[in-house]
Image (cartoon, rainbow, N blue to C red):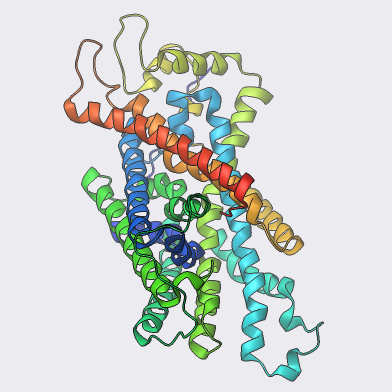
Length: 469
């Protein structure tokens, strides 16, 4: 069998554009539930959980950046790292990512369908919309209209191409922050509940609100794509992207969560924007949410498409073609990692071992997404998302299950197990790891363990408490 080669992707993205896209991936409608989360925990514990969640998520992103050095430059992905660590599970990893991103994308369309009729009720003359059959109050009509924006953006191949859309979306976030802060300063809300600084509502409420904080920073599905597109792939530049995006997100969450909770006290609900009285400013706030989720959909479509492509390729290469050589090679990499059995040396390039055995290396790198397959996958994702969005009015519990498993795996478990197995693997068998490498390996293991705890807690909250993602 001839050895398959792939060319290295040349990055053109700057740290600024990468930070903007990563930040837009992080901040979504979940920001509006931060006040509710603080209500359940009390101010002190609530702010601590927000900051701790930021720390664990940023560590997961950092481990992804470290692990990206172990594959060919410009070809980092969960799929590629899975082939170096647990190749037999790579299809499960990518399938989880695809389903998670697909579900979140649908939820964005559902939000559009739910909010636009309410916006029309406050913006249009009552007589025009009084008829229950009016298209202006039809959720499916608005989902269809906004697909005109979603479709062309979803066909952009690079995340860097979405930087201007992300800037517009983040402008909407900025407006929402200002809206909440202005109402806090004006103290114009009369129906206000008590404020708890230290005492939580109850243990049950803490567990129920826990997913709000943990999943509020989920952006790891796009991290590898952003690294691949960076012009400067140095650790310093990547760390700058992580610190900027996570830092701004954490600051926004604390600001909105704290001021929103103080404004309404224990009367605050799960979506703070609907708590404000009908006015021009609150209507514009709802429009800002619609803009935000519309322009954030392509950031979910991108990793969904990439993971679906990896799943298709894996099935074709290993099962449809029944390639025993590839199967045996994947098993050898899985069992022995980088060890060359002839002399016991460790190599950071498994492709060398593949070449010696005349094995295809196609499963060790990102699979090229050729134009025909790119168009087909994108079209299928868009059509399926649209049909599901107009068929259901709520995906809360489905997303809670998907988020508890998919988001947890992407954010904590996968970066943790990849970091634990890959960091320091370039060392010779008799060469000791540095103190920093040992700390990273044990930190990686701790992050994976934290991910399992989060998964158990969030699934339990979903099943027994009815918590939503």
